[in-house]
Image (cartoon, rainbow, N blue to C red):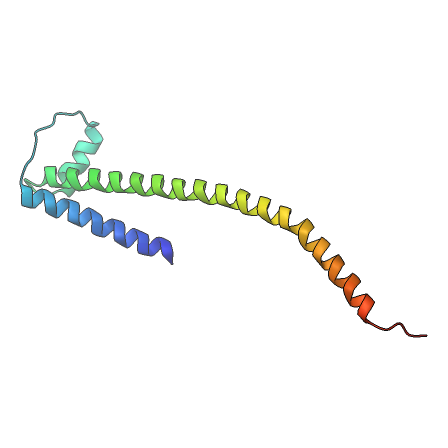
Length: 116
């Protein structure tokens, strides 16, 4: 399934992002506020000294998800435009095909001898 392949590619992109951050080693201290419940859960599920990495991974996953959704929306919009264009072309050609079919049948009837 295509979505599965895309999700795998996104996961690979995310891993590359995280590895590149490790390789570069550049970080920046950021101060932000989190709800107490989130902090309690974070303290319970993250290993000691690994909160920053946990939050980094969570943010990277969110960014990747949003990028994927934007990409999917863009593809959907382009598909809709293309479908409208194709429908218009089909509509234009339909009358020409009917006319051609009529001419073909008219010529075929001329060549076929009539029974008495």
